[in-house]
Length: 375
Image (tube, rainbow, N blue to C red; front, top):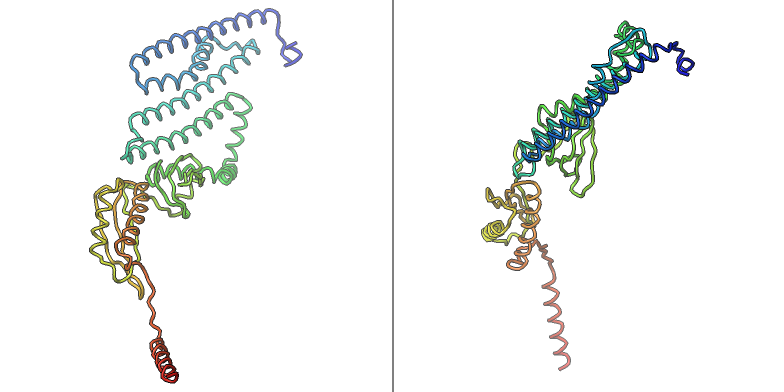
């Protein structure tokens, strides 16, 4: 049947030798599976005793790839090439391809191991996590770029195992100039995004969990991939932006160096407002607030018009969320205090209409004349 299907002439003696070869390869693969079971059984027992999250992560990450790698390595050691047996050559070729896939899978797993080690060493759940976010962003971007490179190299290695592919490669190299231009034009968006991601990781202009304002939207950086960035907006929407946009366009980063911010609240009051009393009340409100970090505060008259004067309340907060809540709290309490204690200090419109006093006097005089006439 195989002779008719593939056009390969195999004698009875060759079939027997191929069977022995396949049996040896199968035994070697089973030995590789047994080694995997024994090795990872021991490793899991050791990690259970140490109770280390990093050790457990390493074992779990590489276990899946090792299921394919160890049996394939053992089979490849036993599967010596036999030029006189075409079916053996085909089977060994498949083992070589599986070996390349297993190595690529293991390298991909190791990138996640590095990611877990960094996550365990640098805690992003702490309040001051700026350094941790920078390190984790770099590792995350590098891991995604490494994954793309691993897939490309693995695919190239598999293609190079075929003689026809090698000949095709030689033909492509002969026209490398035209092919390079075509590939460069086709892959320009992908390459530009990869380079943009690498630039962002190196320059640290953007890190995970940064607070940014993009196109009028306030949010936090939730995910950075090799091609796009996901921003979690304050109302839980997700803004997906190509990563190259951050290199070519300006944006606000509120946590570039530190997370603390200065918040402002403007009060528009009448000229009768007692500024010193308002300043003292602002200090009392800040002292009672849990969102104020106690670093700085102030109240100044920053503007005046023909009707009102503007008071700017300045206050510091440990991060953007606290700054937002502090501004809302100060605005609410200061307006309520002005309504209770100084209602005459709220904005009002004054007008003076001439002639009203004259009309009243004229009315009184006509009334007096009427009384005299009745008498």
